[in-house]
Length: 162
Image (cartoon, rainbow, N blue to C red; front, side):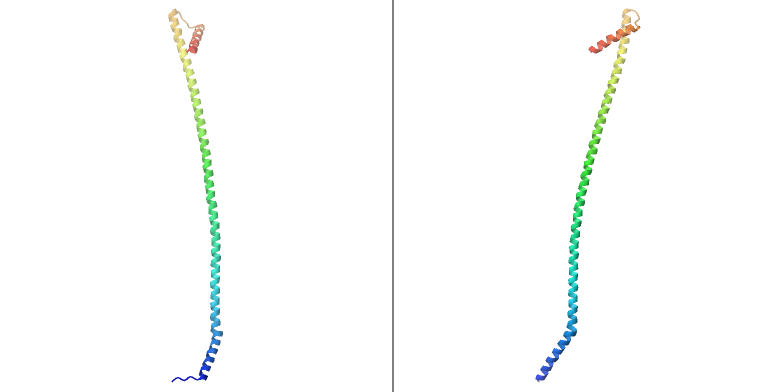
């Protein structure tokens, strides 16, 4: 059977204490150092990730600000272009209207000139016919300047009355 001796128990306890001290000095110190280095490395990576995240957030805010500025500038450019286009359109319409009015005035002047020429030609024709009719009625020739002046005066008076 098993016998327990006090000397064996004390010697076993001393052996365990010596083994614990040796292991603590040799093994636990190195393991704790490795674990501490690992913890520091993990903490550094966490800090670096947080710093990167903060920097990314700042860059995102800057880019969003720039994008907003770009949208505002684009809207301003479009607005300016629309304003310029409206001014050009208004100018073109005004120019076209003035050109149309000028052409209308020229056409009216030309019509009045042609009408005057036609009336003058008709008066001369009527004067010639009147002289011819008066000559036939009088039985003599009316080709003198006095006779033509008399007929022109008569036609002018009749034209003013009409």
